Image (cartoon, rainbow, N blue to C red; front, side, top):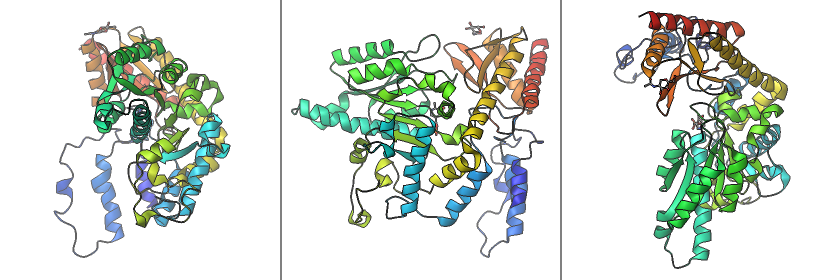
Length: 461
Ligand SMILES: *Cc1c(COP(=O)(O)O)cnc(C)c1O
Ligand SMILES: CC(=O)N[C@H]1CO[C@H](CO)[C@@H](O)[C@@H]1O
């Protein structure tokens, strides 16, 4: 077992595997064994079958997407969760599973200095829940907003049927919002309008208000807006301080998607970026991205969870229990019924690192991004595409998109580091995300040299 952990941490291999689609099937039998295999054979197949096809997300040479968290406290807690193996859909289905989650979301909310209305300990309606992913949180909030608006419109205009109201609902997000936001609109059966971002790729209050006014004039019903704090392409921060007041003025539910960058709010110096949070109805970020809690752990808070709870409430007899109402039954807060004991890994990580070490982790990554930016700016062939935010540097070779596409291909082809690109408007650029918790200054230097050598090759070709 320990050997498997060593494979995971073997960064000497290429960060990207060289296998081609269909590589795996010929390596194992056509069907399940009739008689049991033994542990030794199974574990040695991890090395033979699996590891050659693994992309090393935890290598300091991995700079694609955004980080995914990994730490020993979280791994151990996940193993314990597997051993306890309860399904905590109601309080009685495993009281510790629900109660630890309620308290952990309060701990975490306090670490971010969320307004007390979001916390269960404030004694109000608010509280938190662990969703599997940010995508689910966006959809759950959308469904809560939909239920809330349906109820309001039915009171105001009783003559309108449900079908008519639903057909008029409009949700909003920045054109830079994550693809999961557009998908929430599709899954929720409502129109999702993408609003143009400003020249720094942030959604502004004025642009949102213009869109809302236009829709109101056309007889539509604005009901939900997603503000992204830390977009996936460039880590831009929508202006929540402007979006919040607009949302409140037009009775539009404001949901905050801070999937990646939200972890940085454990550091007081970055909280200015969530100014306006007190005007949001719901807030979500992924400790499973940047806060060392292994996937899946997406923390979501709601000021009034009743909208979500009522939107999904079905109550078969076999799920009823005597304590209903005195503690959350998290099955009402999410899409699936079943849920793992995910609060354990949050508890372990918070206790075994302590807030200070988690803050240091975030600050180190941000520092590494600044280091890379400096190296890049010192080379006149390169330009920084947007202001460097958090642990992400968006950069490009001065020149055509074609030359930048060649550069990316060259870098990934060499296989020593791994990056993914993005495109805004007509401009193609490369994203250098600091991902690994093992990253050191030398690694950023190495990654820069890989970029620089690849540029030499591309430009001399
Ligand atoms: C990563 C990301 C998501 C998706 O996260 P999941 O937890 O995988 O659903 C959503 N929004 C933003 C801004 C992201 O960076
Ligand atoms: C097609 C193309 O090459 N587009 C972009 C190249 O890069 C410059 C900036 O350096 C952009 O302005 C172009 O749109």
